[in-house]
Image (cartoon, rainbow, N blue to C red):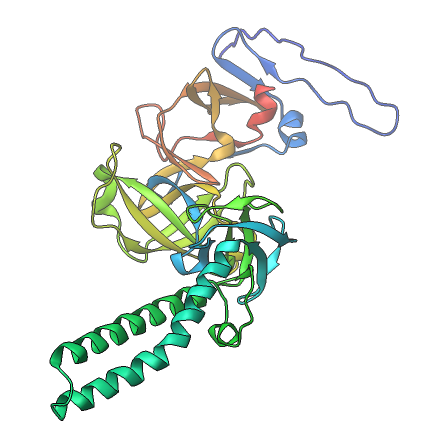
Length: 373
């Protein structure tokens, strides 16, 4: 029998008093071989197997965020400024479409109602005067000048009446009540959609100008994922391709989606194209609009030689496997061998065949942790 010159290095021997068995240390050499006894092999549940052919998905990397359609996002503002009189809303509150959100107060609201009331009271007179002058002009009793003036006055007043009425409607002030003489310095803003308050910029007593966004409402019932794909990869992206993504700041879970729309223009200095994805139905309930995502868009698949992920040893940015070199009696001798790898998934890692590793190689596929710790 060929003689092997092995120097055993004792790692540790621990004795237990309560029916625990002694665990034998893993032996190694000052050369490239590592010795494992049969009892060590069995107690650590080690396994030896050949690399096998496995399917790997080819993916395009992308980043993006969870978002909602424009119809599911509403910014609430007012076209006339006012002081916040009442509000009870906080960020995170749920609101229903048509629900009162807050009230604003300003004397300018009274001025516009007064102008409307004055025009409303004049318009009936101006209309009757216009019709009278029209009749007189037809009968050649009155001059054309008088008729045109009456027509102009009536049309101008009618336009002013319609304009002021629309402004009152925009301010949520009832024109019918104004015509009854019921004026108010307070207006109420209502929710344009149902959803959750995501932004709240109003406090009681604060003046809100027409350019200010008072609050924002988001409806998360129709979430989707918006991804940015680099120009070099965009021709690989097609509708209905599977998207697998993670929210690295919130969860280690992998979520699913499908490509729904691919943008037609390249945007920004980073030259990316927007890709819109529809989420799986069970995914929508777990995510929030605005979350940052890291995604893989699966564009193809291939068969490759692979080993279990746990068989791979990574040290100093280099990849190794433990290749069975020989067996002597009941003992196994492994050689730490460098390998080149390709694609990884949750269970397997692609290896590139070489002179030392091929489909007939026997490697330690389970229990590698015990050998390296």
